[in-house]
Length: 105
Image (cartoon, rainbow, N blue to C red):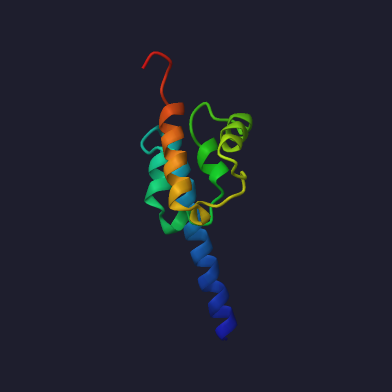
């Protein structure tokens, strides 16, 4: 009986995490939230989310731009947000701020 309950709880939690992540990606895509804010906030829902998923959620960010960006930070695209050090977060947010500006700003 306990294992069925545990599985149900795990499934409920997994569904909640998936739903929360989808919401975060939607908010990034709509401009309501920035990738930098997600990285700095370090919410539990995105703790195990690969950083590439967050970056690609941004407008005009595809796989290639994401790879090039992460290469500049010597960071793998499958690195999770929760495994980033404070130093990596700061560096990434600084570069995202620069990358988000239009020429002439």
